[in-house]
Amino acid sequence: MSKTGTDLAYTWKLPAVLSFAGVAIAVFLLVGQPEIDIAKAQTPAAEHSRVAVGSNYRAKLSADKAVMLLVDHQTGLLSLVQDYGPDEFKNNVIALAATGKLFKLPTILTTSAETGPNGPLMPELKQMFPDAPYIARPGQINAWDNEEFVKAVKATGRKQIIIAGVVTDVCVAFPVLSALDEGFEVFVVADASGTFNAAVRDAAITRMAHAGAVITNWFAVACELKRDWRSGDGPAPLAELLGNHIPAYKNLIVSHQAQTRK
Image 1 (tube, rainbow, N blue to C red):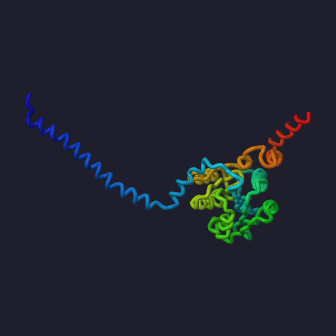
Image 2 (image 1 turned 30 degrees about the vertical axis):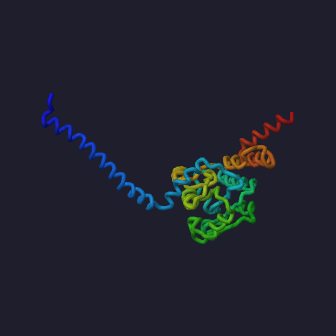
Image 3 (image 1 turned 45 degrees about the vertical axis):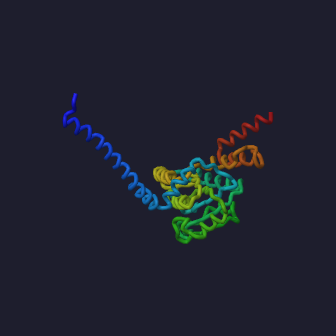
């Protein structure tokens, strides 16, 4: 059967359309690629670092790589902490500090405008670390904006930061975001940081986690630094620390000791 003019036109148009589509795709790939490269080049360095530190979620704390930052645990600011009871919060802060001391972590203390209503640093922290770098910031809200503070952090040569402070959404969050931008692995100790209420705390933690920080608690930090009950001086020092700050754990130790004496 012979093909009509219409059939011939159709058989010609279909390959032509497909050919045109192929050329258009090729042009898009050739022309569009430089635009994509330009967009990547224009992306701020901070955004690239944020992507890079996404692997922080898989990072493991090491006593040989970590530095502890205790930020603005000041007597006046402690009154702002409402997401934890005062006794519980103070216990958590001291427990974290004792953890740093147990594992011999370089520890840096800092305060903000301590001669004003913020008040002085918790005396327990000063007593626990009498020789630690102590940076009394005259006005910087973000501790990372203080050159002396950043210099003290970098002088340790350590790239893992364990941080806690008051308040969570400002005095903790701001230096966390700054440290992440500079490539540090950051571990936020949530229960040794406090703020106005649970909703504010959760928003701050979400912000830091999305930026690449690891959210943890002081008990987890202590256990992660220990890694193995048989390491170092054995189980006794860590068990004592846990027993001093967790009543339930103290009960566990007493029960174990009673059984072993039989």
